[in-house]
Image 1 (cartoon, rainbow, N blue to C red):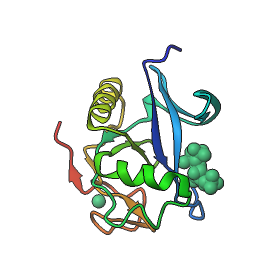
Image 2: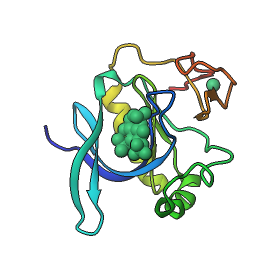
Image 3: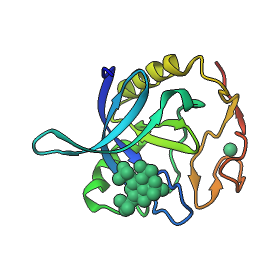
Length: 162
Ligand code: 4IP
Ligand code: ZN
């Protein structure tokens, strides 16, 4: 269906498996009424390439901002090309979407972040099973930095103000 918004964001790997690497990739995000999808792209030609992943809007349980990782990203970023970008963006960004696990997306400016969060919150407003609590910090090395819980699915530790 029609694209509502498009933007290039840096995405943290979702680490669906315990062995998945933690890395950051630049992806072209397209938001429609049904999903938020992200694609690989050719930065020189400004062209979109293959679909890398998508989250169904109706499965989203929470859209929130989170605190930056205290020691990220220097030693976490694997691609040296991305390092500068991630370094200069990290302080500004924080957009998190929960589906099964958290999807962390980094926006380049506060304005872009605010715009996307506003739009996404609108879209998920009537979803079933919206979370009342979330984790305001990152999931790193098998632990939630905010509350030290060691289960990824553990209930959030901070109540959402709506
Ligand atoms: C991949 O690392 C990419 O970061 C994937 O992102 C990511 O998938 C994978 O995480 C992660 O293992 P390598 O490229 O070094 O293999 P993308 O699909 O954007 O390329 P996500 O789920 O974040 O899209 P897993 O846990 O999904 O495998
Ligand atoms: Zn927590």
